[in-house]
Image (cartoon, rainbow, N blue to C red):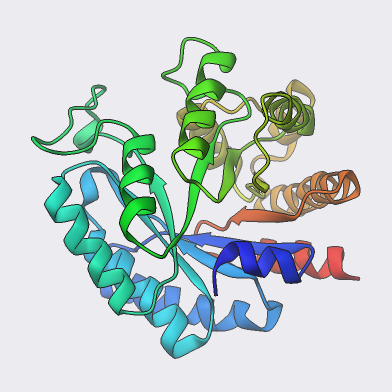
Amino acid sequence: MRITDIIRHRRPVFSLEFFPPKSPDEMALLYQVLNEVKDLAPGYVSVTYGAGGGTRDKTFEIAERAKSEIGLESAAHLTCVGNSKDEIALILNGLVSSGIENVVALRGDPPNGDPRFIPQPDGFRHASELTEFIRKSYPLCIAVAGYPEGHIEAPDKETDWIHLEEKVNAGADLIITQLFFENSYFYEFENRLRQRGVSVPIIPGILPITNFQQTVRIARFCGARIPDKVLQELAVIQNNPGAVQKYGIEYATQQCKDLLAHGVPGIHFYTLNKSRATREIIRSLDA
């Protein structure tokens, strides 16, 4: 089912994001987690696409198996990196033939830590171009990424949000945001987009804090600000993994409750391929 149809018939929609593991043992654990989260009845799961497209085949394999074998609706990430237009077309043909109905269209990160994005010859330069290409030829529901605090490469938030509007105008059906730790950033972001006439669903992305140092690294990479108060409180308990996880679950739960009271159509959880934190949060929200 298309994500927009899921949102239309069900509120709120909780979705979970996973990434392709590197080893067979980790892959087996991922499928175990996917089976475990089925009882949460998520609206869908999404599967990321590694920098440079290095996990492409695994991305599509996981998305397909999640849907056909486990019974979880899925969305496959697809980036502009490392592929020509003809190669993208072959990938999309494969997704459609395998029964995948949802795709997350992204520019993607350059491979090997290269700070520059260099498009392939006869490739796409921007996610808006990829989105337009998909919309013209494929019956897929298209999600695109939004950045409440602005993309780290953008000169300012407003410029980034103008580019996001271009992605919507190119044919995106919904926006899934980058993670954030202060809801005020999301509300400002949402308000500015609505003022500009963007009417598609905007789904906030939440990362439950389960490891202090890991979360700091991820936030820095994404350009997401962790509130000073949170950093100070986590610093005190950072060597107590159980306390950090308890704090993170409680903090994310309060974030989600506030977002749902605000009226968001759903919440997208960045799971880091684990289920406990997301499971506890969703059960608390459903209580």
